[in-house]
Length: 129
Image (cartoon, rainbow, N blue to C red):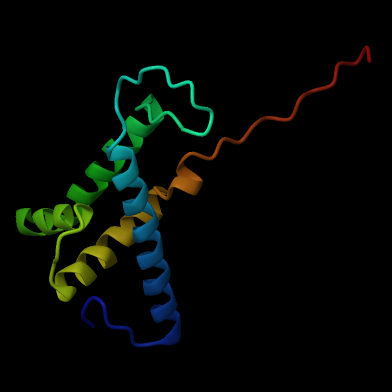
C-alpha cells in the first residue's frame, strides 16, 4: 500500500492523527524560528517577548534532526523547507512528507503541548507538621 492511501478506517484515523500532529509541530517550528536570541526590554504588558530560550533551541534541533532522519533525500528536505516557508509544494510530495514526518514526530513526542510539558513532583509534607 502506498503512502497517503488508507485501506481501513483505523489506518485512515492514524494517518489523519499523524497529519494533525505534523501540522502542530510545523506551526510551532514556524513560530519559534522567528524568535530572537536577544530581546530588548519591552514595557508593554500586552506584548509577549519572543526570546529564544534553551528549550526552544532544543525543540528546533530535535525537529531538524528527526526530519533529516526520516526524509533522508535532499529533494524531500528541500520540499519540507518549502512547506515550512509556506511555499507551494505538490500535493503528493506534501502528503509523503506529512506522513513520514508525522510518524516520527509522534514517536519522539515533538508536539509543543507534550514537548514543553513540565511534570512537577508533588510537595512532600514534613512529619513535624
